[in-house]
Amino acid sequence: MTIRTLPPPGPPRRLVAAQLSNSVGDGAYYVCSALYFTRVVGLSPAQIGLGLTVAWAVGSVAGVPLGALADRRGPRGTSAALAVATAASVFAFLLIRSFWAFMIAVVVYATAQCGLAASRQALLAGLVPPEQRTGVLAHLQSVLNGGLALGAALGGLALGADTERAYLAVFVLDGAGFLVCAAVLLRLPAVAPVTGRAAGEPRLAVLRDRPYALVTLLNAILLLRMPLLSLAIPLWIVERTHAPGWLVSALFVLNTAAVMLFQVRVARPVTDLDSARRAVRVSGLVMAVSCAVFALSALPGPAWAAAALLVVGAVLQADGEMRQSAGSWQIGFSLAPPDRMGQYQGFFATGVPVARTAGPLVLTWLLLGWGIPGWLLLGAILLAASYGMGPAVRRAGPVRQEAGQAGQAGPAGAVGQPG
Image (tube, rainbow, N blue to C red; front, top):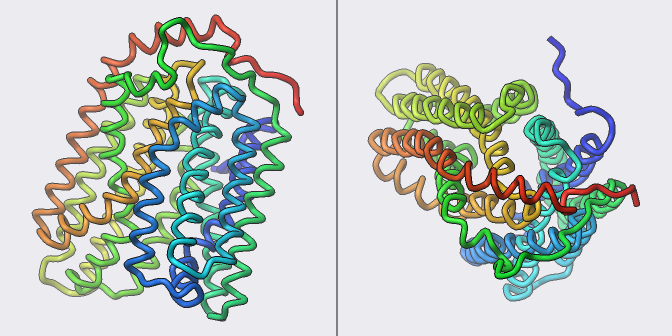
């Protein structure tokens, strides 16, 4: 069966082009940034960790007002401006040589990234019909993984050279990618901004929306899977199993390839809230089984048996990840009022920086500290959150549907002509 890697021509394909343009540079940046900041800038690992933690904490808070700015000023121009701001922060990394300069640059970087994610979601919502949004996001995720993989390979060349010039080239590539992203976004049709608020309506209405906050919290818990592949599983393989160390890289490649090839197919049945709830519920079951399989890899036995269990666990994890992603995309869009899409997407996306900052601490304590019982507890937590998503969505649904009907009557979702 042929797997389509690109959506139909028009705005969806340009959104994919914008995603690809910055994901290649990001892949190289992720591979090389830690060594660049330690060997070239001269920072300690503790300083880098502190800076990143503070930056993503600030970014998670800033995503909501920046998303609201996209609603008021229009998501196309806001997205392009935040892409340029991200490029500027990356180029600033070329010049910094102190911890405080690094702190300022990385806070700008994380803030612009979180705002860019929210405003691009609002732009997608304004350009793509509701029934097609999850499918387009699946294409974006597939292309993102492909771009990150290509960028990681380029970053590997820089690591092999291990020179300041090679690292600087990676940062130039990443910054240039965001400039290209901004140019592509500006070629999309304009989405009309929100013209005003109703009397007595708060500026950031999402902060008072308790049903949506509950859905966002459950999604953040499910996103604890994010640091598994990059941190927890590599440490688990090295410290708790007899599997060979090279399996760390193999599992990363397996996950990346699976998302590239199958994310669109997995997301295809998710078209409404009912199918989204089912996808999230099944993802919780799959992730719970995956955690149990990972736990078994620490039992006494030959190295090949541990490696086989780790591969099976990684396949299940990839399947659960793709189902959870598809379901959460549909839920995040369907429950957001059309005239406040930016701020709602900014709030819903806070689960990502939360998982990036709190996830490593929680997972290393739970899995490396508790061992097999920790894996089983993690599986139970993910399963409970996935099953709790259904009632939470049903509770929020009627309120959001009324808001959506009111918002569709106004001009907020109108699409203008290409700029």
